[in-house]
Structure formats: C-alpha cells, structure tokens
Image (cartoon, rainbow, N blue to C red):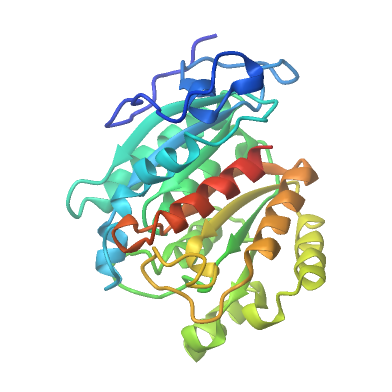
Amino acid sequence: MVSPALPVDVPPQPWTGRFDGDGDEHRRWWQAVTPYAPRTVPAGSPAARSAVILGFGSDAGVRRNKGRTGAAAAPAAIRAALGPLAFHLTRAVHDAGDVTVAGDALEAGQARAGLAITRLLDAGRLPVVLGGGHETAFASYLGVAGSAAVREGLSVGVLNLDAHFDLRDEPVPSSGTPFLQMARAEAAAGRELRYAVVGISEPNNTRTLFRTAEELGVDYLLDEDCSADAAQAFVAAFLAQVDAVYLTIDLDVLPASVAPGVSAPAAFGVPLPVISAVCRQVAASGKLLHLDIAELNPEFDIDGRTAKVAARLVNTLLG
C-alpha cells in the first residue's frame, strides 16, 4: 500500500562523504541512506521500523525566546556529520527531506512537520527529526499525538534530555514553551502528559518553572545528580510506566566544551558518556516510537564539534 506523500518543502538532497570502496565492508552513511518512498509496511516485515530522517529547519521559536538564532541550518549540518560515519546499522535509513519555517510562520511549519511525522509513524517507520530549535518538540508531539498508536490507546511518554524544562507560560509559543503546550493539549484530549527530563540545570530554571513542573507531575534529574547509575535508574523507572517513548534531545544538555554550538551553552552539563548510555538504554528497551534532536546552531559551533556529537547520538540510537 502506498502512503500519502509527505508535506516537505525541500526534497532529499545528495549525501556526501569519504569513499573507501563499494560493498558492505566499506559502507558509510552517505552510501547507505536512500530517499524515502512513501509506502506502508506491515509489522514484522524487514522494512518495518526502518528509520526516516526528516529535517525541521526553524529559527522562529528561538527568536521568539530571545535566543541565538541559527538552528535552521542544523539539519544540513547533522547530515554532513553523519555522511562520513561508517555504517554498521542493521536497519535501513531513508531521507524524506526538510520541512522549513519561513519567517515567523512557526505554527504552520509545526503543523506540516506534525502531519509528516504522523504519516511516517502510521506507515510503520521510525521518524528521526533533525531540528531546528526546541520548538521542534511540539511539531514532534503533533505527529505522535495524531498517530494511530495514540488513537488506539498506546501510552506514550516524553523523555527529554535537556538543561531546561521548556515549560514557559507565554502568550506566543516559542522554543521555551513546547512541553507546557503538550500538557495543555493532552489535558484537552482527556489524557495526562507523562513527561520526564534528564539534565535539568537548577540555576537556569526559575522557581516558577520548577513549580509548574511540580504541578504537572514532571519527573526530573538535575545535571549535578546525573551519574551513570542514577541516570540509568531514573530512565528505567520512567520506561516502566509507558508503552512507548518519544525521546527528544536538546544538545544544550551537554557541557559547553562538548556542545558549544547551541543557543544556550551549558556551564555544567551532563557528560556525553551518560547521555550516550541513556540513548542506548532507550533504544534497547524496544519502546522507542519517535526521536528528535534539537538546538544545534552551526554558526556557533567549533570544528563541527556539536554536529558530530549530534550525529554520533543519532547513530547510537539507530544502532
């Protein structure tokens, strides 16, 4: 069965990278990724849960949140960092192109991306969204909430690796509001948002944000408490509460020395080995329904360091 076409603004572009030869023993990401051809695949087939990359090129949310803009260029930068990596995955990976936000038309862009994500989920694929500011998360939520999985009663939790709650109560949505938007949308649908955050920076979240998190029943682990064992136990407890998980990674959860190319670099941050271990834990759970990675700002990156970290995490999650 052929699925509806995705509402992308930019079709998939050619991938590039180092060439060592043809054949699986030489294969790199740029040789393995193919354009996405919309079709529904039955559960259990070899194509089921193949990954589909979708870019979300947006600066509007960060601009509204008075942050450093430039994240609209992130999808291309992450693809460029993925391209040369050796391809050891057993699943197929496709590229569906980009949804882009023109000017300040954030809500329209989120709606288009959400529709694309819903269609990918309903076609049996694992969407991998490359943002964009963290307004990407509300686009992801729209896609997950509109999918057959949720309509049929699957319990989906949202796990955020982030220094910030992003629960701001503002009159205009931004990169700082997506999870409060989710909570309100879930309440309107007669559901409760299951939301947990790894890496919260206490000095970078006001008392109001902590109070909002408490009122919403948000589970969180502070960055200073993120030892490998503590993070693993925290994530295991959250995974046990849900049927499936939407994982969102804000790269500012990492120390500025590891991820300098973000809107708000972290003075402390969670060590990369801990974040990588959490990604492996979520992937191994078999509950990963959808994932996105956000807040890469190539303009402020150093030697492509942050883009390479983003690429490595995507590779880990799909491996």
